[in-house]
Image 1 (cartoon, rainbow, N blue to C red):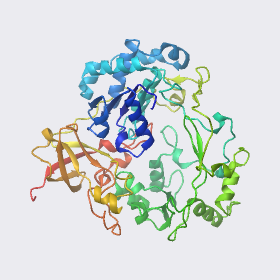
Image 2 (image 1 turned 120 degrees about the vertical axis):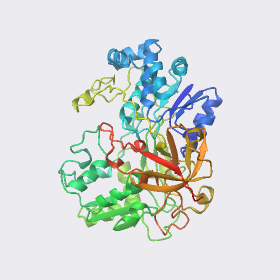
Image 3 (image 1 turned 45 degrees about the vertical axis):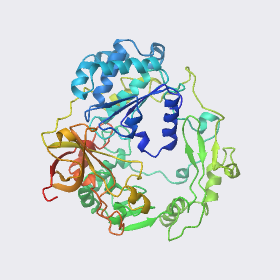
Image 4 (image 1 turned 120 degrees about the horizontal axis):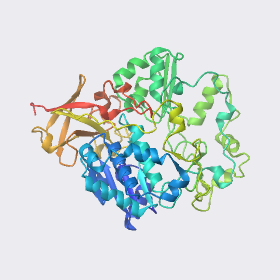
Length: 532
């Protein structure tokens, strides 16, 4: 980011996130003359820092990317040398994107066709020091997989891969001449059966929690009767918490391991409190990136209450399960992890970090390591085809909400860490509850400060409205993480609205290829409450 000449952010609200280095690098890049283009359904703080902000119709990011690819290919603005060497299927991409013109995209996205053409020419003139950032909140629509894939195709067309100011393939120990850390999982027997999160799934890859809910409900491919949720709060994070609780009732045991009392912890049979970050040491972690490093967290103070670090919690659980590990202390674990790497515990003494290279690690143009079957960027993916999925999926236009209804979009601010910090004394004072952004000309008489009822599929909640021109007319927006239902969180309890309560029926609304839950396909009604 620091060395980029043009950064395109799809909904990545970087200046209201908590990745401080990323935000500073982008600010420094802008100070050096880089351009920032921001695409979102509402004007955020990031939009205020951008050279150009496009207020896009919700759910049409894929249409914009296809139109940009169309212009870049037809005007031959792509890096031909890179494409000839590293991209397969370019002819099929040209044929596929032919109907997706800027004029077509204008009707879908609301972004003027000349603006799309101008953006394509501007990024191409800055290539290869260009980054199309797919965002952290992109997996929220039913076509999220193909939308994200189109963004990475745009990066490849710029020839920016493994180039300074471009898209970097994250490096690890082996890229710097070091042996990999020894993994603790090597000491634990492999499960005999099929891994549940990939079993019977049409999704690309694994790790899809919706498969776990399906197995708990149906007992297929095998019964699941216990769940240990470590530092994860699905009841808050995923849609339809009431349905989730009904599914979780099929378990014999639900355990929450967390530093905060979460919604999932409040519903769990057992809570195993983890010590906070100042009260614990952690196992050594690898930070992959352009300059990879090993990170060690050391305990600052003893835990004030009855909590333990994660390594000790899991070691004790494994011991009770008849799978003891040969570790009595975190130092034992560190020594095991570092064995054979040439790095010692004392190397972390000064900063807690061991940097594995003296500078950025970039592959030269002949040594890029793509992990595809062909070793190249595959427009027509062999892996996707083997799973029965299309590589290039035709665009499907999202519905236009009826009058008085809107697509519900959620997000975050720089004040709170997801849904964890709303009860914090100081942060609660700054931002005690969420509000509902609604377009002032499509609000049907609703004004800023009015209390409104938001409803969907039989669920409803009251929230204060914020009428503004800085959101797309088809959408309403609220911050995620509010509407706390835990009485002991006395400051946050009952403050604001829990967006997931309004996302009824969305737990099964899943991108069949990428596996992401299509949260933002929720349509809500909004009406002014008369008893103001």
